[in-house]
Image 1 (tube, rainbow, N blue to C red):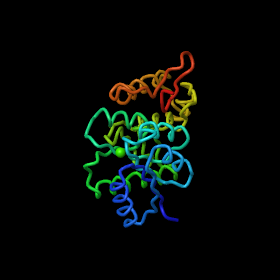
Image 2: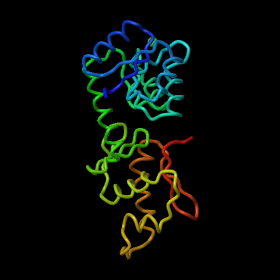
Image 3: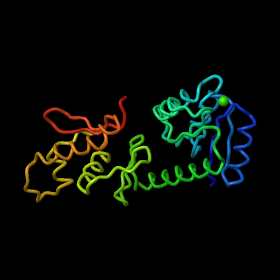
Image 4: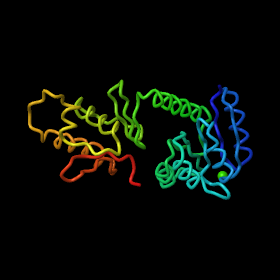
Length: 227
Ligand code: CA
């Protein structure tokens, strides 16, 4: 089955251009020319990736993105007319996976589509863990934030992996010790607190996010978002 890309773009010329280029690459393409119909098509269930224009009539790209994200984790690449950082932040905050300005070269867009689809395939095979911009590559012992490498020690990596695998679940220090350090660990149980602190310094504090929550008297909780 062909990979299906939904292009939500009101400017007919751009939409048509994208359709031709994507079809040429072997993708199946569906077009929507306004936010509302785009949103409906996005949730039809057979879309593998969405290219979403920011400025749309009816429902804005940001709003489409937010609404789609509530229902689906289909990858979304946001397009905007201007190279504006606030647009980028808004786009990524609303749940887009990537962002491009409209002055893009088509080769660059195609390359990003390939990267995102490859990543998605690996997510489906459960070799990567994602929490918004934070991505953990299990097999490669790599972690990135917004595609920038985060340097972690092996234990930090394993602890983060354990937290991400159990997101939304409160983990006690004992559980973390068992799973990450092993049953034969004879050191101080406070080692978990020390490593949580390392992770917070390298991720939460560095990128001004709040993934790792303290549950007083119990342990820790990894939350993928603030909602
Ligand atoms: Ca537009």
